[in-house]
Length: 230
Image (cartoon, rainbow, N blue to C red):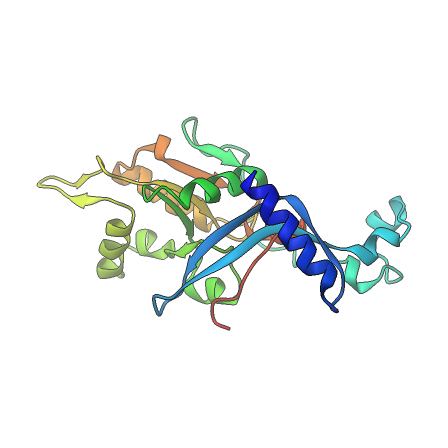
């Protein structure tokens, strides 16, 4: 009911604005995103579409030509990304680690707003996070755990954020948070490497989730994003 109310208000505001008309889809939630200065912004996360695109006739050639989308497709209907980087990842990393899609990510974000035991982690390097990320995500670069002996202080800060405590022998994971990790896309090895490093340390696999599509898939379907550096 609350989500429907948010959607109605968003649609009302958009319809009354003078800007390009957009439609927010039914899956819409409000997320708290904490900036580096400690300030918290409330951001409406949803899939938005430019309504003008609904009037454009599409066919298979428009979508899947050798130069897709065709140059004749209006700019407001297209999104372009680099797709030749990295290597493809398997659908499942570990038998006890759930692989998430966009709707599961939204559900996780919604639950996380009321549950301090949940954390959404952008595991890419800081400059990538600052360029663009998903609202609600905190940045814990994977290199804190893969480049051993280099980032020890940052690693300990990260472990504290994850709810992990130092023990007499190793680490205490009894209060470890349920964490959803992501990076650039199905071709990105950064979140898998971080998950693998945490598994090696003893982090419970059932408390880790993986958004395989990452930022590439998130943007490709028109989901809300932000640039923390701006």
